[in-house]
Amino acid sequence: MLKQLRIATLMLVVMTALTGIAYPLAMTGLAQVIFPKQANGSLLTRNGQVVGSSLIGQSFVNPKTGAVIPGYFRGRPSAAGSGYDAADSGGSNLGPTNAALVARMTKDIAQIRKENNLPATAQIPVDLVTASASGLDPDISPASAALQLPRVARQRGLSEAQVQQLVKANTSGRTLGFLGEPRVNVLTLNLALDKLKPMPKPAP
Image: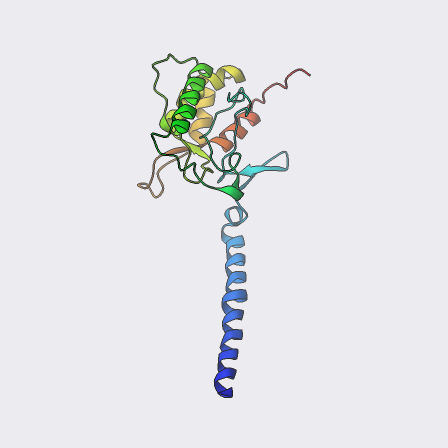
């Protein structure tokens, strides 16, 4: 019995050292060498300050009015906590006939049409008014970006061609060429706009 206990104890120590210490350290070190940006959270910086991650969306909407901040592309709505909260990731879990969901989407659709000078019959891409399952989706569809492009160009004082170039530069194709759909990263796109032509600061 003592022999079996010694063997069991030795195996516990060896396996703990291998799988609990050596393996994690090896994978962490390898990731830092091969994929340092991804291993550290795909962080984005502006003027040397971390402003977010390309993997997690951010809100560019005024929480009081529901209107998008002038000069920026709006992303998908988020049901994660108070919005894009990585510590509270999740969807609303509301069904398509839920009155609260219908009311919120109806309000968002009206707001998007208003801020982009669209007629009442204009179709709005579904991703602009529906939250993802995680609530952290950083991307919108190319159609959603195209809908907002004229407004952003006008508010920034840029040509639509200039903004289109930035949209194209921040658009990713299907993963491995066949998985998913093309997508536009909203945070990297808005940061690129700020770099090209910052919005004037509002008067005090």
